[in-house]
Image (cartoon, rainbow, N blue to C red; front, side, top):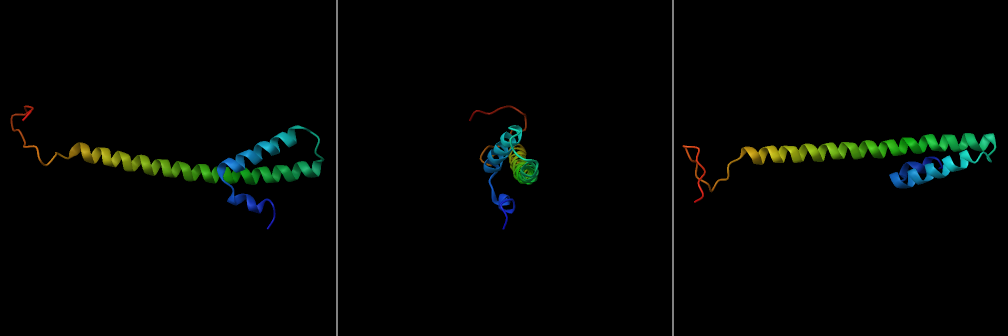
Length: 94
């Protein structure tokens, strides 16, 4: 397994940290062209890993928001079972 293939198991934070290192190395202009190309290839794969993590996080947030919205809407439409209904639409304190 190559160094780049192992990146798919990285956390989002680890992938971002490695991307920052790669960008720093590439900006230093001290790398030969062959090394620059390797870093660029590794960087594009790390970006894909980050995008996967972000997509999964977005899906999870949407699911949680949808579930919360459904619970809030459900509880707003339900009447508490222990309170009697008042046909005159007056609020009863007792």
